Length: 371
Ligand SMILES: [Zn+2]
Image (cartoon, rainbow, N blue to C red; front, side, top):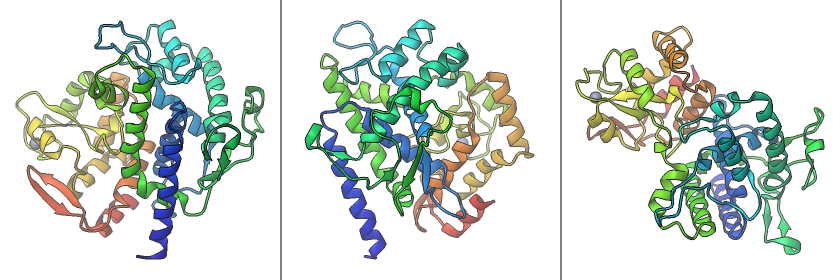
């Protein structure tokens, strides 16, 4: 084994220890770690690799986004009425987002864009408060092992310049230095480890929520509520996507005669993304056969057309976004695609059709994604 791989494993061990060390705390640290993983992946550059720094505010905003869908009332199967799940002992970030949701009567399908649009000025105030919480609490304290006075800090992921418990008046200032400087190689390692770390973090998160809400009995439903793709109905996007694809299945390129399935091109388990660029329609059978696999190079090439501004499929996606007011974050989606595909070793099994797979050719994928 090479020395680099050893270092990566040592880093992974340290991260696992950190996840263990968060046993009794709120879900903040898990949310923060997941936010960092996502941002590092999305900011990957095909030439220079993973980023060496992140903005603290950006991490905080992603933490808010991760919590947002978890703040619709959850019906406890034990017979209790629906309520916002408790995730910590205090009036925490999800509780405050839940209050915003109630105040503005935002249903379970409302996106974070809807939450902002309903009262732009009020949202900025709330966001400022929540960002300050993330900067002062989980971001500042993430790399601590143990609790209270006995805790030992080891900044093995990133360094930063602000004190913990930093206050809102400080974090709001334009000259506040919110830079997170990643340790050497850490960006690369995080991208590599994400497929393993994401399910682990989600499982820990769900078990933490289950502990805080002991009257909830249905764990399986809870996982799906917190992290599943079914939280937002894709119904509204199905018809417009179907029309834009000329009634053809995205994968096998033949006509769809029955109800099409909306498929996540980048599998949900690797990159939870309900924005329009990641959605295609397909035969239910093609969708089922692909499942959580990564689509092969022919499909990837066709999908990447969406990110070429002058292409017909880019135009179609733009039009659907305008027509349906569906969220779009093409830079983020494309960044995630790079992080997933560029890190795969040659020979990885890629889905082609039905039960056919092909080995990945790293050079070809590199060429496609560099363009
Ligand atoms: Zn098909």
